[in-house]
Image (tube, helix red, strand yellow):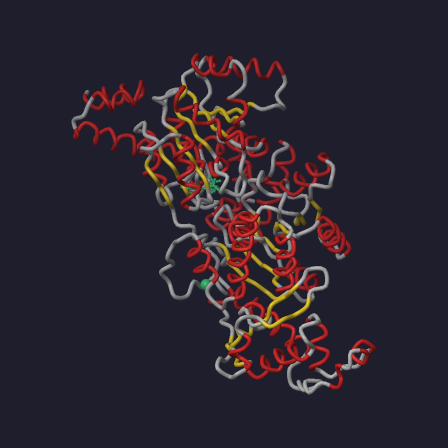
Length: 633
Ligand code: ADP
Ligand code: ZN
């Protein structure tokens, strides 16, 4: 009887229930009940058997009617933290989301799970809005997704007062902060929510939050008492690799050819590069499409859609691409050029492997990129902004140049300590670079820079050291200098690498942007005098690394037998066909992980199929027989 009553009250209005009864025992019984219920719903609706780290605590917090700020990396499982409570609480959960495509994707996925979810944005027709408002007022919606500006529209306040709102979720909450990388002015009005609906819990979620951004989220939303949940920033399933920029296109081509059938994003700095890379890939028979702000809206949407629906494997894009996409099975992210900040790098690589399966992040680096950006930064008017940008870029260059575990460095940037010595999922840990003493070569380079009176760029320094002849060398009499032709053993490429490294350790300075010349940096004197040695990491070729990487185990389900692999291929084709019929992306039907598990476990009936991760009751009903038939075959 007692538990019945508790459940009844719980169903009616959990919030007031908690405040009415302060008896610890009663509350904990209820906690227990709600925890059990959450777990049951997790399986029934989402098809998952357990919560990921912190999800259970966050869900419990929200169910108890309290505010929460959640910082969790991409792919960590933020959505579940409000979707699950939304299913349990009476009324509608309002989800504030910055982009139409994000909302549509989430709603599409929820509806496939049988959840009453809708979005409200500018693309809706009048009659759809009417229907939506009707459902909202009647309390038929579990979740309603909207853009922040919708909340400020005339009449919306009154509408809110007429409905029962169970929870407010602010997705991509870093958009509220100017310190974040995606500031959205509209997010600044969200503080009004707490004033309008003081009893409704707010949950703010983000993947990138430096302490400053977190503070802004608290201040702006006026939720001082919100509990703070921070998960590790570590994306365990991502492999980080950095290679020198040389023959970059060939390297990219081989990388992709080794991964046929996998989806990936290539980020490049300029529109021109984006076009060039995608065209070259197409010529090599790779299904690739470009994406940048210079394309028409229709073309951009069409290309994005082709990628999401797996009609092309690769999208080549400027950083304009990606925020609005939820594609969980992006298997690799390639940076053709250096990202300007570590946040950007983390965010962009974060688009790989949201589904938790092993994925690869490859960045091509040259000091030339750093220098080029410094040139842009120098032209910034605002001195504070300029300094900020320089600092961020410096941190980024240090990240790529230091021979230290990439993961450790990334986490350190987010003020997190990575406890392991070897992460086993980065190029440095898998294939540690050798440290080489290059003091002698460095002295030659530095004295050459000095002898040519700091008037020439890297190319000329290398030419002089190698004793090349050219009209310019003769014209300036550089062939008469003592440093002319003194470097015999190091190759031109090696000398260039060394110059770049010397720039990195500030022994060399690059001056000017249009015709950059090399000058001596603050560390030069000590090196020239022999008071300081120079050791430089020498990275081994990518070939060698690839072997180690492919033999290193991913976090996904592997295939022990060829028949499982074959079945997986067939299940994928079935998924593609169904997705096409329904006009939804394949991952909305089932994730790769679910198909892999099906291929390995080979469930024979619905009961067994429900044991597969990602198979909830609605999906089992909708697609179960089709997939079972394919497995039996
Ligand atoms: P985020 O919004 O944090 O980037 P999502 O909410 O999109 O992450 O979740 C990432 C992926 O992890 C999704 O495919 C989701 O279905 C899956 N996921 C979330 N929670 C769980 C869980 N408890 N068990 C298994 N998979 C989960
Ligand atoms: Zn590592």
